[in-house]
Image (cartoon, rainbow, N blue to C red):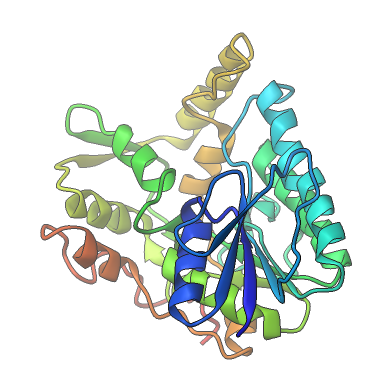
Length: 320
């Protein structure tokens, strides 16, 4: 029986990986500050210590500090301690074991040219501390011969970030989005989980992970809102106005460095510009994305409309 160490197993992505690994017959070590949903708990604070990976055959590293902190804030320093220094500690403990390191499409350079991103897209110029620290952490992992997965906008049951933040921004039946409608890649947590459990057998390197087709942003958001029983109209904020508001919000947040700004340039960039991942490299390893936003909508609530929001032509993210 294979023993899989899953870091961050009490978190969103890690808990799915741990539970699915156990359901498929693996012995699971849940490595992190809190116990995971299955298996044996191995206490580990990624910001200070080297983990005990005794008995593990494979390591799936999901532990990460997430958010959009103010530059120079204590939260940014804490993020670096986990995402960069914690990665170095993990790789030291792995000692030659296969490592699957969960990164993010946030490492890719912002700006134009993201209508179909392959793994050779430039990794630079990240707009926030999360993107910068994930880029630095994955550079260590790649240098050590790990498999690095780059999902975008992971969603699913138990998501504490993406969907809750979206729902919280509905005001008086209106959700304002920056700029015009664009195609975007999203990643169901089940698709990422399947990749995490398969990737230890892949050649070292970086791999994009996303749903089988991109989505139209506005239609996808309407699908999510309906799935959660939220009645709201989508409005479009001119992009220059959105950029100005984000810049102002970041400047004001410097006065309260322990509080994340309500709007950031990173958030505007991620919503206002097409970001579609080419996942053909992962598909050549035998991985396929079997889950879509329509499946999430059906599983989440009866108000969802199956199939809503999928992009059926034009810029495919699967490479097919």
